[in-house]
Length: 332
Image (cartoon, rainbow, N blue to C red; front, side):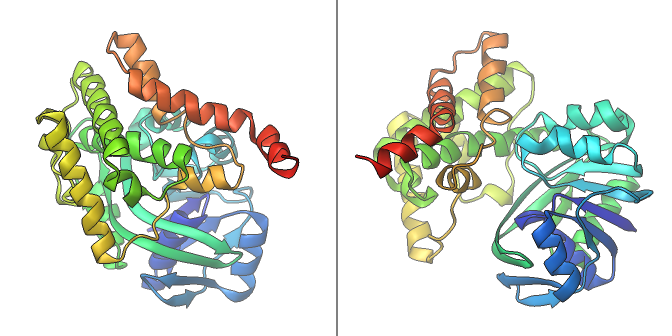
């Protein structure tokens, strides 16, 4: 199997590194500094996995002819550029490890719907320096055919991940999995970004947990209008999704507060959502393609999403005023 990982930052590097260490033929396309460091000294992973491995790395896909599997791992805001830079590739299939649910349609427009495999990942990682990645969350990666059938190519991709030491599963309800992940992230990412709080404090704050419950339920309502059920899976066993969706609000809030307390007790308080990382760095976030998509779908379908709209517009305002915010900080 030949794999091209396009956009090998934190998550993409974890995948490329594990596959390469297993002997899979893999090429990673990354930012110039990161690609140069990996080419010269190999890719170093630290955190949940500690190793250094040689991986062919380059700054673009020019000159590459194709791959059995193309994995898109750029931030959602860079999807158009990524697809423009890979559309010449002859690929067996293409899958995206990005957040959100709009990516599959974007890939289908370039490669054709028959080559698109649905995917989503719970891996957490941060590029801490050129050539070095901190692997913080060893979550599962899901792959599935968009029509709900089982296929050999999906099984082969999932098997390659598992053989490489990564959690993965081939599923027959990938749309449901993707929307469930969106429902979970819909409140926590923007609330962390707007409050500058790590996600365990978003969960353990009764005030923010209350907002989170309302935002989760708005995604569930939009998905229901699209006839897409949310799914139960051990990957999100940290949460009781039925309680989040259906129980009295105070009961759901208490459940989330308990989640935050358990995360603190486990010592896993260092995980910072990528949206908060982007805000702290003054970068454009993935708000448009994630929370923004839910907001727009709610409007289109006539499903009220006021809490989601509030979070979406708040993060947009932060992005629109980075320079003014920094100027105010310098000159109070």
